[in-house]
Image (cartoon, rainbow, N blue to C red; front, top):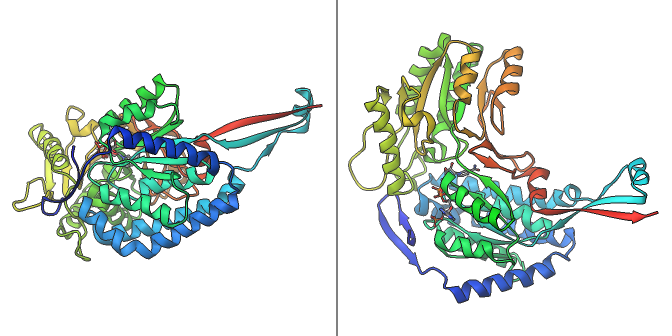
Length: 461
Ligand code: NAP
């Protein structure tokens, strides 16, 4: 894929970039290693000052970087600005909490004595340069939720961003430079995915994190495994959204729409499969479909737009294939499902019912504004449908029944259970999945410790 900004609202190529050559990559790796030697010795207070400054700059830039993101990948511009604000908040959270999250842990006296020590400490030390392979869908957020904890822990970052968001990728490097980080603490490598393997095999790179598709995750994890390097993988999702009879249906419907179409339906944690108890199925289906049909689809730079185009032509083609396969196999179209005419890679909000396990859409991720509806006879069937997926990122449940709540929390196979609301990330809480949604966690104390050398410091008696 060429490294280029192609506006998904028009199909027009706005900017292209040459990928870095071998010499430049070598220079960048050497710079990262040198930067790490210094950065690892800095205090939490020094690191926090830099990250707070980056947060201030990002907030001031929200309008401009918002427009850039929108022209690169098509998200509604108001959502792009909100993404910038969310990133600034996460930076501040890590700047304020990293020292406490990574404080030395004193081993219990009795255990220390039992091991023959006068004292045992657990210390969290940084690992070194970490390679981050990132996707285009939240082009700022995905990077910041890696970079903020990594930099606070004393690591340095090497970003290989998706090839369709080069301007946002370069903006991030510039942001950290302007905030005062020494050269090499955070670098953007404009490279294609073919260049990732050699960089990952380089001994100066100590670990990798990838957010993206299953094939990309498999490829990076196998190389890292071969090199015995730590990885965190945040991959796809097909989150269930369960609605039980006791739910507040008004809120369940309006939240369902946002949960499905935010970011033009291209979010790993978007609700994608709507599993509705038979007692409220008709009512939910009717109201949800009406609300999906009422959304404003159009130019993502317009403030009134709810749903913009799919980010790439390939992405829209994949969506069309999945929907067409479902329709040919007997799915009922409640709304949408037809490709619009005109420029750009638009796809209408679509609701499909009568989904069966034979359809590709039952097992694959729909990355666009397409919802599938399932009818469940009872709680057991709702759980069974929800878990019948190769993915296990997050899950959403609407019920006001306490016993049901307990069952869902116990039985849903996912890295999150969001009750009477929709899945969203927050810097203080762990984020990540199981099954083919990946492994490891981002955000919170769990996220910052993923790329730390957890060191036992044993003092002889
Ligand atoms: P993608 O094609 O996998 O791309 C993600 C990143 O991986 C890009 O930088 C891409 O570079 C790179 N890449 C692709 N193939 C690679 C390979 N074989 N070796 C090394 N790097 C490779 O994914 P996408 O289509 O951009 O993003 C959508 C996917 O990301 C969805 O499945 C979504 O659910 C998932 N996602 C997950 C989370 C989460 O937190 N779990 C969050 C957001 C998105 P190029 O652009 O140069 O190909």
